[in-house]
Image 1: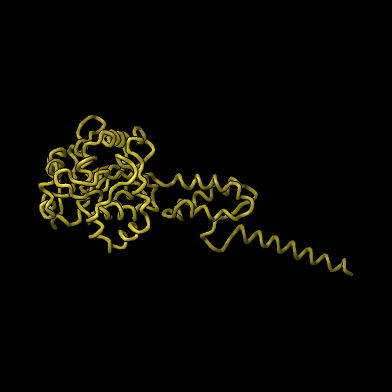
Image 2: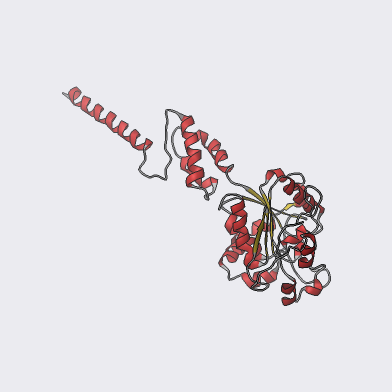
Length: 317
């Protein structure tokens, strides 16, 4: 009698297992991947499409965690991670290493919102690498901390992400490596006026980025890095390009005019052939200019917009 009862039990178990497998291969939750254990190659191609289409702005590490605890595919999770991570464009962010104005000794550096806001836009959309002429700590302008410490994005960046600007790589190590990136971005602050405007490594790198058709971008005083930059043909990078940056009126407003080594507005207007533009709302009005692959912003208020335009140019916004 016991043997007769065992038969239906085994059948029930088999039906339960088959039902379970069917449920796993066709999950109700559309956000979960579709598993096809009988054909692993089908799974991987299907999962890659899912990563690109359903999770375009989620970090690769988050996307691949879907597979970590699943049977039969755990050993292939590294392959899936590599496939997912390659979908993110790479941006080289170049900060100043200058912390004082030579004429006055006034403390300067890079400007908090001009890195924090583009970072907020790009952090989950691109891989960001940070460099500066000297490497190590890139000096943060303390005035920008005082002025923007109540800004939520700036506060979070300042409180929780110091490692970004305290461990920059030396700019010279990126010589000849433009092919590794999709864009270069120069945040502002008065510092770039005194180093990046004349830095040979930066100038050479910009030329390589231009020759390879990459995105070249900057905000506020960041475009100082472009005043001596050349394109692939040896002409001024900005020749015939519409461009913006911090204006003469802005320098006057904050009483920096006499301390600067040159007028950024005048120099950019010269190398662009008279195509410097600025906000009609004054020196602190938002102004973002996109001319081909060149993206520039006028001031701190333009920082988020510059980040968004970079993301658009890279196809991730």
